[in-house]
Image (tube, rainbow over all chains, first blue to last red; front, side):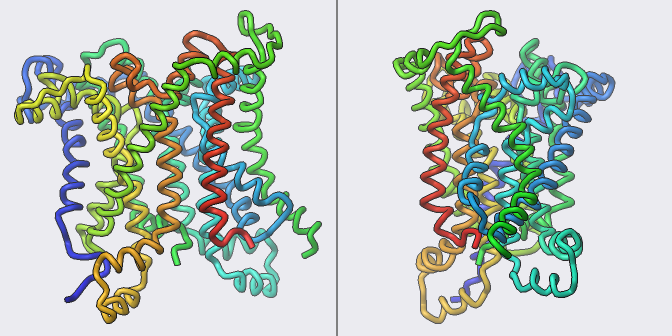
Length: 271
Length: 289
């Protein structure tokens, strides 16, 4: 019996791939139909494919700026989350300091808070700061769930790096900052990639806060879709087209990062 | 390093995180706690009312039912997504083009905005226009979205579609990190594939499974957008979960006090669950030394 590490190709991944692909296929099909066609009769593929739904989005700044707005606060959030989390993760991984256990637990607790709970205070706080309808407001609000997860993931990666490396860097005369830049960051690159991926993912899919904290200037595509959807429920093809376009940033991210992700998803300390 | 020096260094390293978390976590929670013990007129004058709101919530069946539905949803979602995700990861090809393509495909739903997922699954269930509705009709089944059980099944399928990929990717990466020697040794010992799974693969998946369980529990417990888009929380209140109940109370009925008290109770539950998880699982592994 020869057994390869992950078993032979089997039906399970293929069936699961089908389960993933069919709704995606349907999203694309709906986006290529006309309103008239979708409400007349069922067809598993578009009778006369049209790009007019996409055209509507590309012609209207109110639509296409939604993607720009969403990407803006998501990237801001990823930058903030990763930047503040690296030193914190280092502290948790390397030092046992007063209250380290409680703090680590406290951070995780915030990850479990529901955006729904924090929406009302966020609206009040950001109104007082004059930051309603800005990208930074959403980016900061999303930190309450992304910073804890970033610290948690990065802590795993840093803990996986032998302490001898710290010691020899110190002997070589590196300052803490120099050690971070020259040694630590390159070593945990897959960890940073996967952390950025997680932050991007959770910020990109979140709707409630992103919609609640914005009005027009920073309105993300999610918010625009929920408004369009509540005004006219029949306009499925347009929403489907908006959805298809909403997949593209994530797809680009995955294709570029797939090598790092495959390693990074093991969370640093598997062995 | 002396303990005092170590504390100072740690504090400096932690200060950016603490600052951000104070602004986006501690301060808003303080507001919520304030709402919970006050009554408000027009949203700007507050009167201290003590535990009135808490008594009201803890006597309200609506709250318990919403809590029960949320817990039930989380348990169902976990019991579908974990076994499915582990199984698919075990059977995935180890390398090659197929592995890459599957990885990319399984990641797409993870990066699909919640509202798109909701609309997509709502559209799939539409009579005459939805693929799921028509496929089931072809099998002689009627997808009746007025049946609570049917809506629940659609929501579970939707969540499995959206998030099982996370479990697959985590487990797949965990499996890839197991050295081939382990399998060779197992083969020499004549271990069955169940024994290989139980004694080699599962222990190595511990960390990634911990991440998967924690993330999937948290996010399914606070699910908000999708059930509302798919079925408006219905039929009736059959799929109105805790988050929706909270927003409904605080923002739609504009009852900040009751919403705040609900949030505090919710926070208590979250605290209990994460404490249990932390002391049972996280602290057992090599914690900061």
